[in-house]
Image (tube, rainbow, N blue to C red; front, side, top):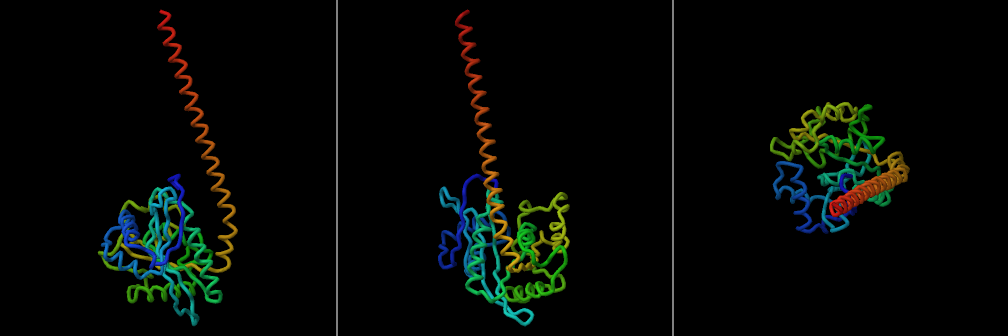
Length: 282
């Protein structure tokens, strides 16, 4: 995380989102996306189940959000439940914060408790590689996958896409395109650099979605299965320890820098006093 300010996250049902909240989200959104009028943003927001809100602890300022929509589809002869992660924006100063990930994970656990016998999947459409990497780095079973696609996950991606965006899915390319005037990432937000292309998953994303800069959205699905949930639970202590270690290391570095600055200031003061005494002696 680039900023040292603490942040916190919470899920809020769409009925609890005020006009002021919506405007704050929109003002953050348009810093990173083009071609999204306010009326379109508000209309899209009203169709969501709720929003994960990330706020700065010091003043409760909104610094990030992610919308969520719950729905069910039939796939391969069975009913499955999907969580659609829609508009997601985090202020650049807070990229890397764990607040959104933790808040989302707690929400998923609650959904599994409420619907224990219904398979649960995360569905998203990825215009930028960062969104795709969130899924690829956190789900053992996901589509599309650099190691090969699973037909059952691809079918869920198809059914979910048709449910939310009827007739918009190009099944041959497995891409959704909302038109040339649709919402697009600003060019400087998540460019893919030559160094990025050395990462297999980022290179895979660009190969599958070469027109991402033109607004093409790639449907993605991740299974909230035992492997995924256990992985998140088992990783939590290590990540918390790592974050704590980094915090303590940063504090030590800061303390050393402060001590060095104080020492230099003291030495400068002594030298100044000596010069003044010498001048008086003359």
